[in-house]
Image 1 (tube, rainbow, N blue to C red):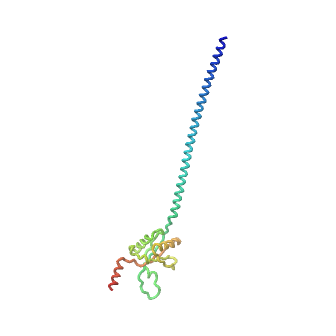
Image 2 (image 1 turned 90 degrees about the vertical axis):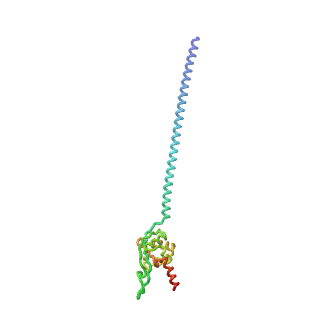
Image 3 (image 1 turned 180 degrees about the vertical axis):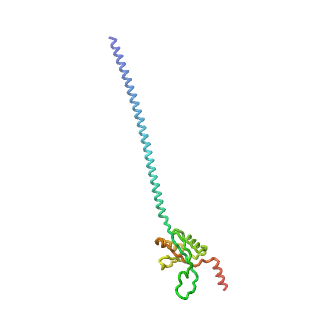
Length: 211
């Protein structure tokens, strides 16, 4: 009788030990599975974060590129508006010469002027460059040009009125008028008295005083 309870207890003990072992195995498997899931979740989160950073970087780069292109286009457009287009003008210089008494008829332009030039002039050139071009066509020093008596007119039509240049203001008006003409007709005539040498005026005054 005593043998049976002992065997039962042994069997129950073995079953309990076996159950504990299985429980430990199950617990170990669950723990390992949980750790794997945790590691996989961490990798997925890191991938998502990396992709997000790359996407933000690409978006920022695209925006920066678009901004630069837009800025360059705007700058080019502004430059195009600020810088006028240069137009080639053709200018003749007519220098007055002493009138020779004529018996009949009205003196022609060849009787009144000596033609110099022509020379090419840009519509964007300054008034100072204009005077330098005249001095090169005559030729004479710039300081010898009598600016106050310079007049101008368009070559066509032939009956165009002569207008006083009047310095930089009149020069700008002349450029606007010639520039507005069609290509091939942008020709102007500059009329002026002969250049005056600085040494001539004192001598003339002294001679008049001695008389």
